[in-house]
Length: 77
Image (tube, rainbow, N blue to C red):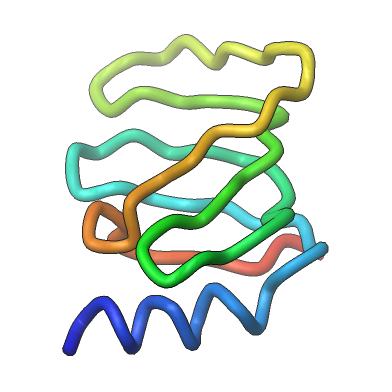
């Protein structure tokens, strides 16, 4: 059931800049490019790890994330 809710939420933000927080505490910044039934494909522009003051920025790459690992998707404007 939680996966279905996550799927619907992720579909609303396709092609929009978002901040994604995972259950492990990692925070990812980027654009959702695709959503399948079990994965969100995020074009990553930055990563921030929990407990670290460092912020790493990478060249944009697409990272598949499992829907059940996502805690929140926040729209960035």
